[in-house]
Image 1 (cartoon, rainbow, N blue to C red):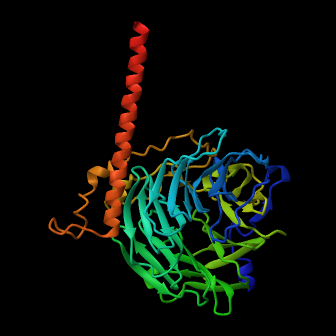
Image 2 (image 1 turned 45 degrees about the horizontal axis):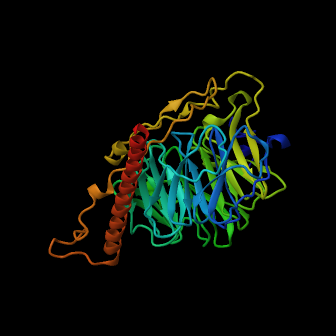
Image 3 (image 1 turned 90 degrees about the horizontal axis):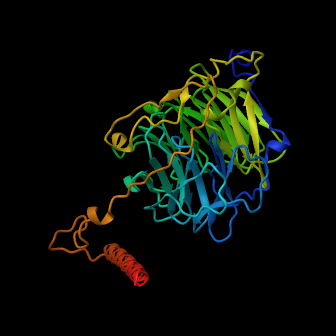
Length: 471
């Protein structure tokens, strides 16, 4: 036991500290929806929080510098017709955020650098393909504009946001509700957990499960899983006696765990937040008032307990700042944004060091905002590691880059209504979905004709005004 206590690690004395009261974000009505997502997303420019909203779903976006009491009339991002369940900032554009909702849609938004006067109601693109509520979204770590969504229809869909197209639909892989989905470091594999008690490793482009493990934790409550930098899988779940448990697995030999540790008895699902640069995983349970953190190494017992940050109030959700948004001059290695009922409290994790110089060992080069691949390259089978940047001089966020969506004409690439997949020219498809598609196309064409007629009428009126004026 004593040997484990004196284990050499530069992260042994990491400690958490809340910021001062004037640096918190006050008077925010955090969403009360019962869903196991973090309800909060943060990047070096903005803080986004899912909030209570009448008549649909909404989230608030605040510049990081806008601390203190939030004006009750502060503009919201509203567009969904039902509560928002998950939000995620694009890793390659700090002004772009995606939201998933109970209304079965995913919306992608462009957030301006200035604070808008009115609510943002028009998304850059709306992605429709799920038949039930969408509870999980996650951007690809290295490919531009590739977004993943998972819904309560047990379907995982990959989208090209730049064209508004569905790239891949992973059907018939999950037999029940999907709890979480995570990418590996270069975005070549996915790990998913499901209510059917299986953890699956999926190659999305081959659309096949390459490894799976039934019941890594014996309890019935939700399991979470993430990839580590080395390609191992870290899981959190429950024992048969409802004790919370963490595990580390090698997907190449999934039968036996590398490590399995019991923790405590509590109902809250543990949300893991992983920092690949330091190999530290932080566990935050919804309803807990603490953050536990562990270092993952290649020495037994492989998952080493470091410490616990404790506070008095339970957390409703949690945001995790990417490495490039941290203050390297203060040896800050992680920053959390803890949601209370009416406020958001940043918590800073620091390694105590006496020197003011840049600490190379704490800050290896980290993934920057430039994508390593285009969506088409990734889809064709190419993989690339993240493009790394140095934090030696700190990171300065780039100015607003507009997300351009080039939609293909849906009338060009659709087969004629009577020629759906699996039907010959002699066998028109009279199924309900096919008829609805025909009706949608007719409506779209009618709207185009009406718009053209209105334009012609406006131009004729203008012409009349010119001719009357010359008379």
